[in-house]
Structure formats: structure tokens, C-alpha cells
Image (cartoon, rainbow, N blue to C red; front, side):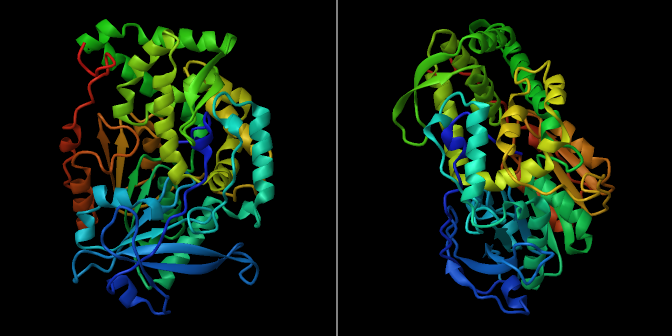
Length: 492
């Protein structure tokens, strides 16, 4: 889950609106619809084929169906054959705070083989995209080191700006929406794909509506059994140590970038004692700004870069530049992460989930204890705890965090280098699944589905609705990107 980058303004920017112009010829899903949904021909970004877009009104509060309603937006990307299967693939977006309707590029890269026989359904979960997005403007001081007071003030004002009760935008509300959509589309069973936070939705969907699901693919698992923040610092440190070890085992990297671990921790101590004023490009405007950066900024910049192996390979060089007083390389990495976040994340939706389901599970003392041996400490928890201080939520329902027991055919994918949802987190959920195979890509970070042969593996799994007999060896064929050693690249 969860690429949540608080160090810069754009890392918390709301989702850009998705233009759902949509739809094409009748798909099996539309043809089977008993209640009649009005479709519009539309196009999803990064997908050439016309889709079928729709809007559905749902109750804001499912226990008050006659009260206030909100609109959900969705799209059906038709299968490439006229003889499509009756069980489509439903995409459960990550974040939390992403809209599945922005996943066109992932659909093209990761699900092109599944789409040969199946429609793909994208629904912007409530609070994101075209589904009553909980968006807010962000102050300029979000570019650089950010105080707890600034975060608290921001979330208080953000909640006050909304025209609905933000307490009704949790995972449980989203799941009732998704089940309503399935019924309205006239689909008896669906196949699920969830990525990062979407895996939590997938697991809860399997628990609450097992008869609605034929199979499930969970990529980068974060289970409702364990708060994201319980393992955040440990997971970040484990991914960092993998980077340190990889550099130590690479002759050129070891020569040019020795002692990475001690050097990073020295820099963090120095910046904690004395933050630095420097000039960085604002990722939202592209203009240079004078900002103050400290240890929180650097620690989060490292953690965010660890999500993607191609960015991870730049970290040793970026640290070297910081030691020379140049923060521009990490600034560029931060801008790249922020550009991704600004086009996919809606902060109000993120807060409605994390402030209800994750932050209350532990307290600051526990977060400090868990982060004591991590370069990231309790920074991740403390940032989100500050944001959640003024964000209204209900308590989670009784039994929310109970182990999920299921025999639904399930494929789990994990990236061994993932700093936020590594294989260890998947094993928590795996224990309750009796019909599961867990595949680990040794050189992948966060999100495995578009990595190497993963699209073939997923297509085989969906076709058979069984994890039996699928060979994961090919997932280890892509190698780790070469380390950047000089401004010219990977050659010493």
C-alpha cells in the first residue's frame, strides 16, 4: 500500500479527474444486465479501445438507504473477443485513495492476456476520481520539512471543506458499493485483482461476499489483520538493507559507494540536529523554491525511492550528492514520486481509510519502539497520526481485524524489495487461505503484476481459477537495475 509521500505538496495532491468519455460494443456484462444501466461510449487514458462508462447512485450511508446519495463512476473495458467469459475481472485500486478508472496503463501492461477472454471492470471507489472525490488544496509549505501542526491544520480544514460526512468513506462502505455494482451489472461471479491497499479490499470482499467471487489475485498484500503502521518502519529498513547488501556484493558499487548504511544514518542524525536550507524544484509547479529539509524529508525520500527498483539504483549516488551539499538528485526522485501521487491519489479518501483502520491500532510509543532499529523510525506513523488528529471517523466494526478464512482460489504476488507490503505481510493473510499460492519476485519492488512474466502467470491462474501447477520461476528472470555510479550512469 501505499505510496504516501508527505514530504512534498504534490505527494498529497488530490486525484486528477479522469475523463470518462466511454464505451464500445455490447460486452457480455452489459448484455446480461437485468436492471438496465445507462452506458456512455468513453475512452480510458492509455487504452485505445472504447469502453462502456456508467454512473450509479448509492446511499452515502448504507444503513440509511433513503438518505443522502452519492454517485459512483465506473467503466467496462470489453474483452477482445465476442465470445467473452461471463466472469469479468474487477480491479481494486491501491492507495488508499486511488481510483481504478485511472488504471488504464496497468490494464494495458498487466492484464492484456486476461482481457483476451474477459471484460475488465473499473470502479472509482467512493471519494476518488469521479465518485464524489474528497479533494483539497494544499499549502505551499508542504514542499520540504512539514510540522505536525501544519498537518493537523490541513486535515481539519480539508474535512471542513467537504459537502458530505467523510466518516462514510471507509473500506466497508467501498465494499458495499462494489457488491451493489456487481448486482446491478447482472454478474453472478467476478474475479478480483487488488494491488497494495486493494488487497485489503479483496480480502474483506472474500470474507463478506464469498459467493460473489470466482478467484482473487492479491499483489502486495496488506491485510486488515495488521495495521500498515505496525510493520512500516521494519519493512522500510528491510528493503534498505537489501539495497545495502546488493551494493556490497557489486564490485563497482562497493568501490564507489562504500558503507551506505552508516553514511545514511550519519546524514539523518546531522539533519535532525541541523536542518538545511536549500533550493529544490517544486514538483507541482516545476519552479525552484528555497525550502528547509531535515531528517524526515531525507528518510521519506529514501523510503519512497525504494518502491521502484529503477529509482532504488539511484539512491547511493543521491546520498553521495547530499554529502556534497547537493539535494537535487533526491529532489528529482521526490518530484517523480510526487508526479505519480498527484495524478492518482485523493487525500480525503486516504485519510478516511487510514485514520479509521490503521492509525488507531498503535500509539506513538509503540511506533517509536517498532521503529527503533529502522532508518525511518516512527516518521511514517507520526506524519499520519498528525493528519488523522482532526479527521472524523467511526470506530471499525467488531471483527474487522479477525483472520480471514477462505478457500477461494487465490494468487498472491509479492516483490522481495517492496518497502511497504513485502512478502512477510502477505504471509499474515496467507495463513487463513486454504487454496492459495504465494509467488515472490526477487528483484521486484511494490507491484509485481506488470513485472516480467507476471501477466502470463495471472492469465493462466484466472483461466484455471486454480493456483495449482503454476510455475513462478520466470518471475526471477528480470535482474535488478545496475547502480548509478556517476552522473553519466552505471559505469565507474
